[in-house]
Length: 159
Image 1 (tube, rainbow, N blue to C red):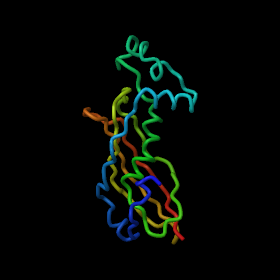
Image 2 (cartoon, helix red, strand yellow):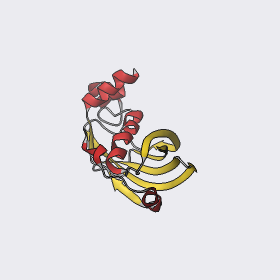
Image 3 (cartoon, one colour):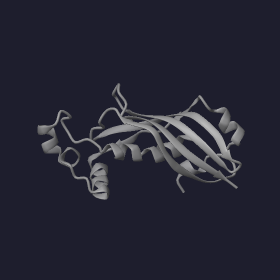
């Protein structure tokens, strides 16, 4: 089992007390050409800016291929597992969507990204359902501007 699943759980009250705080920063994740190509195959988006390094070098201002924005966004899942605490009694968590998602800077092939997570809201909608809102910034190693910023909403269900 992956180590990120083995974090000790915290109480709901402790989780709610974290609202307004930066919860943590994930590890770095490499976005190399292999990962970009695999993602392109999955979503059937083979635009040259993603999969043709030679052409991307000649015809784009990036000088190389760049990751799909949705690829970068999809890494939020593993980044959040690394950082966000598990609440005692949780049976499942689901992605409820985004109120805001902006792709700020392209991620060039070969770069690493990491997520910075701040808990913005944690309120019970029902006795067994928590709505959690997290502000996320995905940073690109060595760059001043982030890859993306997001206001991410999740639902956490309890027994």
